[in-house]
Image 1 (cartoon, helix red, strand yellow):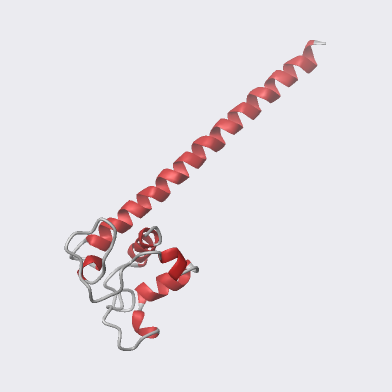
Image 2 (image 1 turned 60 degrees about the horizontal axis):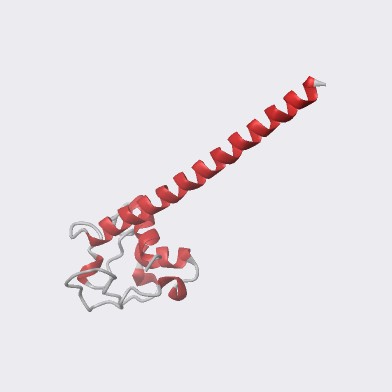
Length: 124
């Protein structure tokens, strides 16, 4: 009779371990997501990189410009994150007279940097 009890205990231990690993994994993914957003903010505010504050009002930004629209309610304005990425990659595709530099097309920012900025801007 001991064998079924031992199997039950072992199965419970494995289930508890897997549950714990899932929770740790979820926390790690959340932290990684937050770090991507933080990195995106750093790139966006960097005067030698994105320099978004030169033209846009952004949350917590000091001395913002007013050439571009305020970056607020971005999820509502860009329900598809890919459209926001396209705008940052090359705003002149939608508006040939745009003052916004084509960050991707002119290789001002890397693909990875643009992705991080998108993640940050999408939180605004």
